[in-house]
Image 1 (tube, rainbow, N blue to C red):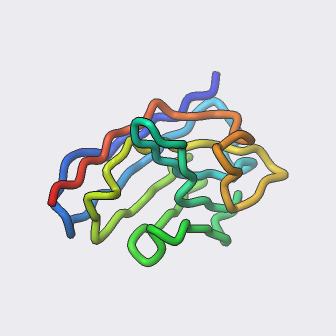
Image 2 (cartoon, helix red, strand yellow):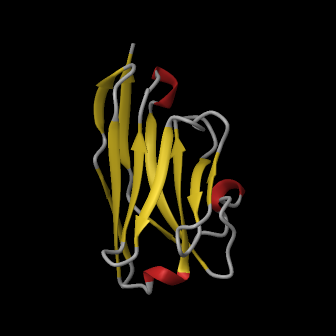
Length: 127
């Protein structure tokens, strides 16, 4: 049974940092592109960062480019999202998701191609 579990969310002041982790089990992790999505109530889920199966290629949405860094450890089956210079508009529920190869580094719109999802971790940034 596939299981993705996010951790590392919390409350932080603007300008601060958080590091999200996503531990994966029950799948051949190195066969999956991985991505981070976020969602706020009333808005569509947004793919903000993606990484290729081997980690060589990454994608970021413009709003987080230069502030967030996605990485993966295929030996430990863990996905990371380092978030720096956080802004109040980064407040959202953050989800990790897995897309089996063949896959693209850029997350598919709405995450429609991602087979597996975590339960999410809340990030709140106060001004």
